[in-house]
Length: 89
Image (tube, rainbow, N blue to C red; front, side, top):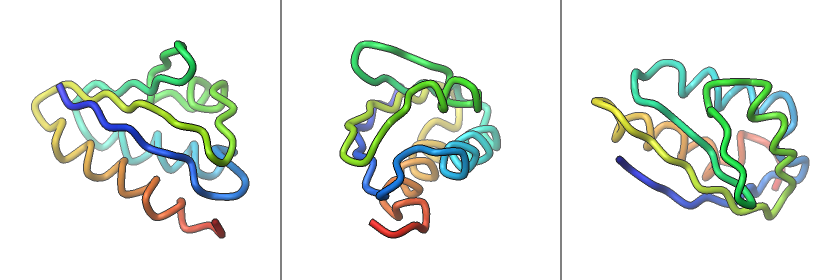
């Protein structure tokens, strides 16, 4: 299992576009993927789940990956956060 802490840096937070990028990227991997925020955990491969987080700019999230390709999945998803989903920070 791999656990990573990330911060939402893009100005608009996790709205529809970044949420879909997360789900699309995570779904390429077999590893289970969960996102935790404020004691709440959702399936990171579910667009509805990611949207319900309502994660605004500055929100701290815990990403949990578990499975045979967890390292690759973690790298790909964390990179999205580090790049601010290609949006203005």
